[in-house]
Image 1 (cartoon, helix red, strand yellow):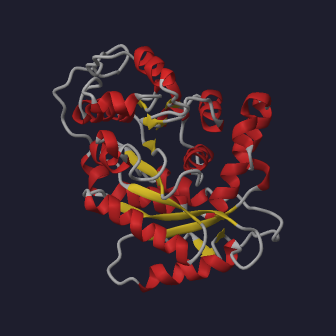
Image 2 (cartoon, rainbow, N blue to C red):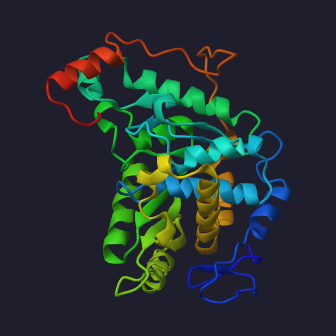
Length: 344
C-alpha cells in the first residue's frame, strides 16, 4: 500500500519530528477500515503466537487493539481472547480492555486453564478429550466474532505448549481458523532460526503463518534493533516464494519494563497512559495495517467460522462444559500434596 512507507523499521509520512519523538501513524489503518475492511459480517481473526515464552505476545495484542481503537474502530467491534492460559492474574491488557469496554476473555475465565495437576489428570482420562477442549475454545471464539470486525487470539508460551493434552497453539489456531503472526525475540541468526523453526511447526499442522514481528530489540550495542532490522529484512527479501512477511522490529520500551509485577500497585489512569504509550511506540515500528490486511485476505478469515452442531447458551455464549471426572479443587489439592509448585 503506497500510503505507508517504512524507513529503518519506522513508519514515515514525512512528518518525523526527530529521533527522540515517536510519531503515531494510524491514518493508513483508519483508511483501510473506513474503506470497508472486515465489514458487512466478516471478521478478522488473528492468532498472536510467541516463538519463545516472555517475548511480549500479550503486549503485542494490546498494541494492535489500541492501534485499532485509535484508528477509529469502536470498542464493540473488537474482542480479545486468551483461550488457553497458565496465568490467571490481571495484566495490563485486561485492565485496558475493562477501561475501554472491549470484551475480553482471559485469566480464570479462559476456556482452558493449565492449573496445577491438570495435565496429569488429563492423561489419566479425568478431563475430557482434546476434541472437547478444542470445541469449547472454537465455540467461544466464534461467539466473540459475531458482529465484530477484529478478534485477537493470544497464544500461550511457545508454539508446542499444550501438546501434552493435544491442545497446543497450532491446534488452537486451526480450531478457531485464525492465521498466525509470530512474535520472535529480536536478533539476527538466532532470531531467524527461531522464526524458521516455529513457523515450520505451525505449517506442519496446516496453519497459515502470515509473518513475523521481532520484539524487545536492544537500544544499543552490536545487536541494537536498528542494526538487526536490515539483516532480517534482507533475509525475508531473499526467500523466493516465501509467503510470510516481515512486519517490523520493536525496540525495548523502558517505561514498560517489569510492569507486569507492578499492575496491582499502579493506578488506572497511569495504566491507560502506559497502554497508549505502548501502542504509539508499537505502531511506529510495526506495519499493523499490513498485518490486518494480510489476515483479512487469508482464506480462513474470508470463509469465516465452521458450522457447529454444538449447543451454546444464548445467555452466556458459553459452550457446554467439558465432562470432567475430577474437579479442579480435587486435582489441585492432590498435586499440591505431591509437592507441585507451578501450573500444568
